[in-house]
Length: 122
Length: 331
Ligand code: HEM
Ligand code: FES
Image (tube, rainbow over all chains, first blue to last red):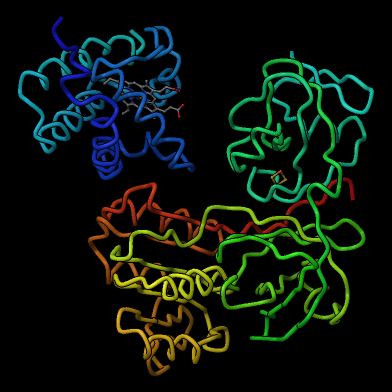
């Protein structure tokens, strides 16, 4: 049996390696950082891990409906395609920095892209 | 809505209500202090039911397994049967062995316990006086050096506990203590890791403990301690810290003054401790960072340290809550 995307990327180890890199990029980007102004950084980090696990094709329990609910307050605050593209860009840059194989990156970006309508509540 | 059973009564929780709020609404006296899951004063115990994870987040593994939880941050999804823990399980006896003024507003309290307390320097304990008032203070003492527990108490305007300790408490008097609590302490086994310690005012207490613990453990990596105060009079332990810096090549002590005297005092830097420290250390990847003081400084410095490259799990914090300034319940 061929390995899943999550296994090929490196599983939870890869998520751990990526989460701080990714979170740092998001927090430093003036275009999207205000969406992440939560007072509890550890809580935010846990959610970023869920995000990455999902994008890496790993085990998760989120439905499209959950993604809608999680992001609905952000959409009400103006979350749109331009923000989605920025976050997707940070995800890609994180993976490139970690020297993840090109084909894997393409698969991750396809998974992330597939959530666009749910995240933006369309 | 879920309900709680306590002391033979059953109470339905209102929407969004915590277990602590529900018990107060129904006229139960539950001790509390921070109301945000930090101080552990309100700790209760589960008999039956399933606790939400967040209600046990700050507890030790053993405490979790025994069903302890924090009602101030517990919003259950299912019915719970709960009890107040027996007092002796939580609180032990201590006796005041010294009260000394360190600065105009900070005093040093030393306590002796009947049975030794197993703790790490930098953790915190809760003090309870006769009328039930509870407050948390961080440990500046190091078990291997100090027989007594050492706490630095900052006198707050209107602070009932802090004023009482600094002005009225006398040597020989008893106090109840609970603890140790918290995860802001020196972690051994990584002698080469650079450490950045930042604290304001009596936030020096846990750092003074952590520093001495690290040096005694043979820590070899650089250790930088930034102690901030508004005025030069608010700096204390300067001589002790300078002596440690002299004796240990890898340790540097920096006093920071954020008030008007900043720059005018020889040897001290002008500015807030966290600002100066983070300006002098722009790449913190691989560092462990300790932040002790009031929550706004801790939160801001945590974000900046993270952005400077420190991993989030390597940023350990001890945020003092301004408990005495909170609105008092029903009075
Ligand atoms: C690329 C597609 C995205 C996916 C797959 C995704 C996935 C997730 C997941 C799984 C959670 C955790 C939900 C929870 O457990 O409560 C989450 C939370 C969050 N996401 Fe996204 N997300 C995406 C895009 C975005 C974008 C573009 C933004 C904003 C610019 C964003 C901002 C947030 C925030 C702020 C939270 C935390 C909400 C809270 O604190 O409850 N996400 N996301
Ligand atoms: S009052 Fe519940 S932990 Fe402080």
